[in-house]
Image 1 (tube, helix red, strand yellow):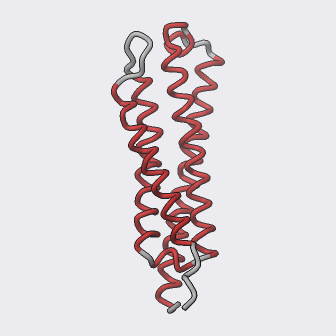
Image 2 (cartoon, rainbow, N blue to C red; image 1 turned 90 degrees about the horizontal axis):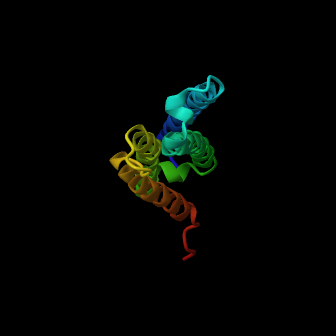
Image 3 (cartoon, rainbow, N blue to C red; image 1 turned 90 degrees about the vertical axis):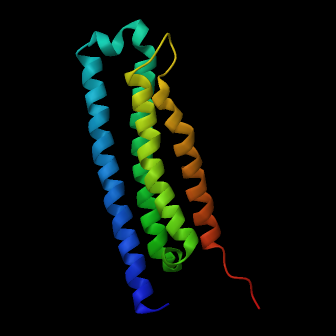
Length: 151
């Protein structure tokens, strides 16, 4: 590995560290806001006909926080295996994780914001796209970590 490859790996790691901690900050705050709605007994959140909203927003909070941890895991992985940052698989995995971190929580949030007759709103259609991107990111990281075949 060249010094430039190590610098690239360090940039990737730093970017995912920042994104991971940013996700944790945002979604810990979201969790506190949801707890406040619960504690203040806000009807728009707690009424029985708002169960879909409550579940969707809880899923948005949980997935957002979990994805923050996945970003931190990817940062540690890139530092342990710097070649991942210089291969196409690593780059696509990074972008896929970034998009999944946006689409999954946003889909759950929007699905709960506007819901109809016990069903989540159309925003929930972002969730399977985000989920597929997350699966793709994990697969590409795994493939990028495989040792090269011996000659």
